[in-house]
Image (cartoon, rainbow, N blue to C red):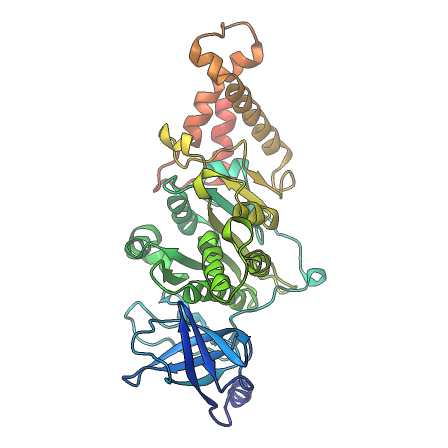
Length: 438
């Protein structure tokens, strides 16, 4: 292993630096001349500030023999004529088990003040490719998510990918924190992409806690960071998950949120001259989403798998907006959170009638499927008649199905209500539901 690592290190040794000069800055885009032959799309470039410090950038395209670059940091102190030089052909990281319990940025650098990160034995490309479809295993057995509404109505299996779709302020981050703490897995890789800076410490201390953090690596890129850093943090999240999956471990990969990744890619596309398409999103957004999300899923025969739980911020509570629609078609199920449910005080505000898990009915036993279908039937009938019931237009005894729904639906709603610190198990949840339905 030592000699293999040494050989990999020797491959990365540069024979010399190729220098160029910064020719123009247009908004977020930096144009560099003189290194066109040495650079390729995705390559790292170093830009030297007036004070001698270096800002990393990435080549995103070429125009008129100039490399078009986007920076990972602030461009203060950089001007026309500043020195630029090629750093690496593509981004790599060297993760190891010693990274567990740590918080890193999109470049894999520690941001938790706990000192430097030890380098792993072998490098891993940050922008990896999904495993070949024919080589992948099938999804595994059902896993406990610790949330009653999901364990009963939208179960998740090992290697499955679920999306949590919600508008702002409906509670998706709280639901994600419950899943991060309670879901059964070996390792958790959590990507906080484009989120509020003040929430990071709250998530680490209140939601994950010391025990949850000990089995996790958290990748953070807050909303104030450049678009390239936010996108890179999403890629790094999956690269770290792939590292542990290839060691035969069950990895829980969580991202909050996919929409912020899409917004970052939109900024990058527009800055590099792409035409806006659907709702201002550029074509590369819809090309990158499946490349990213397909990296999660079952492994290729060593028992490892990446179970993916991703939040999607729906714009204006429109669940058919372009990003939500594209992600829903890629993932293996979607959990719909509804503002009207949150407004009446039931949390998590999951609409179980609109939520779908594509591993059903095989994920449940026959008895569990019968219980789930019976509960859904009562909730569906009650939802259809809710307006008439509120207006007093329905007379009890007119329809036995509606009478049954009137009896059971409020009790099922109470069963679905779950506090943030309340951990449930799937078997107990079905026992409670069976008691409610008699």
